[in-house]
Length: 438
Image (cartoon, rainbow, N blue to C red; front, side, top):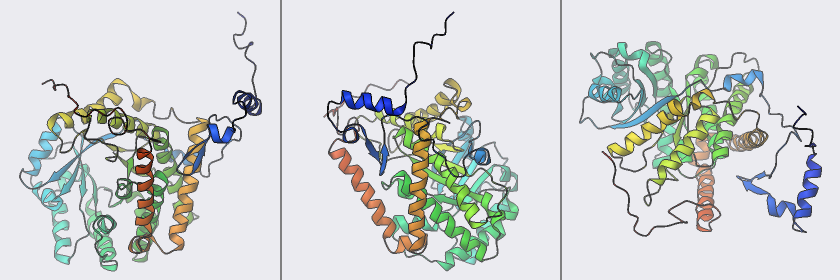
């Protein structure tokens, strides 16, 4: 049989562009076909010209490849009305393998004392660092009392910066950093390498920031925590693996992939910058949360499509833990079940956990990853030049950047440059939702 490709002659990028410009009949190529995403120019065609060389990419950066599967996580705001064990038991019965506990997290942890552990990973969101020695001792005692649960205690972390940003609370600075170090010194020996330092970039992502600013904030926050901990006696190699990063992912499919790929490059570059002799590079733990920004009250079942798109983007970008938010808030049982089913659909029906690297090598995604990493690093450097992450927060610099990007998103939807079905396009005044099957 003749070679089927003989009739198809290869063409250079320049030849392709000449043909396109001819078809445009005088219209400017750049103005007509080029678009922009977070200040990054997006071309209509990507080839290996020019080939993008991403710093720290390649075999040495293979630590950035995500695991062959992921942990599906559900968030519980604990208020003390149920026993902690009953909550874990109910989650286990629903085949939930990871719970993120917010709210009265110390009471939750203490309430597990004396119970038989179930194979459900626990992410304990402890909120602000302990305000006193007494509170720190309560945390230490709670950790010691649940020794049987230690293999399932995935994360126990405090978030001072998040409170500063969300509530505008005056930072306790040295007091908070001293307590964080004491938490590391006194709690870490009793834990099985649980993540103690969570960098929650969703606090800016959910406020409307773009991907580059989320990445820059994560780097700046991590850099300051590392500096504060090492100043108090910790070693970088002792604490680097204790970091966990939490990102908000949007409905922009390719940008979401690029953001997660870019972060693994940036994290490696940060550690190498802090210690040029750094040899061992561990995969950074990444927890992705589907964004609330794109969730709508009108036509709320469309949110199922949005969260599925976000989840697929995250899978191809690479992560460890994924929280898929329900399609409505407050979430009913059906909304929670649908969120769990998206995990199962992607893992057990679509087998996406077997093809997580299918985006590797795509010229467009590699270009977007490179440009996004570069822009995020530049923003990180700008923040560091004016001080540190805390300075950026207390001066209002970070909030101004987030507000500018939030306004840009709103303007894009108002002008219909971006479409949100049911909000600025195909709006149903009084949508009739189909009944939910039992």
